[in-house]
Amino acid sequence: MRWISKILKILALLVLSFVFFLALLFRSDLPEEEVVEKYSTPQSHFIEVDGVKVHVRFLGEGEPIFLLHGSFSSLHTWDVWQQELSPYYMTISLDFPGHGLTGPDEKKRYSIEDYSQLVFDLAEKLNLPKFHLAGNSMGGAVALQMASQRPDKVLSLNLIDASGAPRREVRSLDSTQSQARGGGAWIFRLASHPFFSKILLKCTPKFLFIMNMKEVYGDQSKISEEAVTRYYELMLREGNRRATLDRLTQPRNTSIHFDRLTMPTLILWGAKDTWIPLSQGEALEKAISGSNLIVFEGVGHVPMEEIPTESVAEYLSFLGVEVRKNYLQPPKHLAYAD
Image (tube, rainbow, N blue to C red; front, side, top):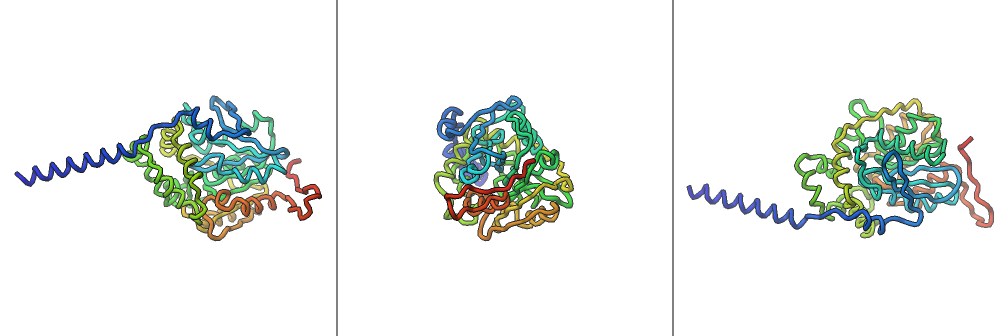
């Protein structure tokens, strides 16, 4: 019976070691006030939309452009784009419920269709009958859903490493590579697992975010400590971890009708995207008549962060903005609005 006793001692030691390890990884939520103070900007506004206090940032004047971020992200992913677009357009970025400074939705409305309706409601509240849409990853799926639902409202469409491409079988929210969100990304599988998801609610180590960002960047040398800390602390904002797990376990319903997407459409893609592969960008180009696909070599899943200047230049060119060699001349750009 000694061998049984030894096995029990080893098992007990392993359990205690695991508990001790989890204790080291324990991270409590960051208070909403603390995170808002650190990450809001002078351009930040908190607008109530159907019971949710949405963090929205406005820059510029002119035709409106909604900038829609992806999973685990926030409106900060558009920092450089907003600066570069604002001399020509009114840019509107927002944190979706369960992300950034917006925080959780009591009614747990985290689906693509929920997010689409929220943007429509926000546009109505801002008295914007027509607008441009630009979306990355999950935000791209939201843009597709909106453009398909109300093409009369969408002046142009910009899809950046977007989810939502047509599939022969099952369509998912954050990737079309497989039935799981995020394609082959381990973070989606981990967060969706019934056991590990409960651990992640309280034990969320920073190194997971470093690993995550190494996956989404093609050039890892461009990952800054400031960006990692921002992603990490915004996830720890009160209620965001619970909201993320609720979102990833909800049904993945979308209803995109590609034949309705007749507005000018630009597709931007990182050739080294491991979350949503380039083949999905090519599928979108085939599905959307008249669309144009531009591929960035050596770039990953978030071109607007990794190569913000190069990627926004392609978008400005698509919008018809003329690059000025003589800065004494006024800028010239096309208008898609009637």
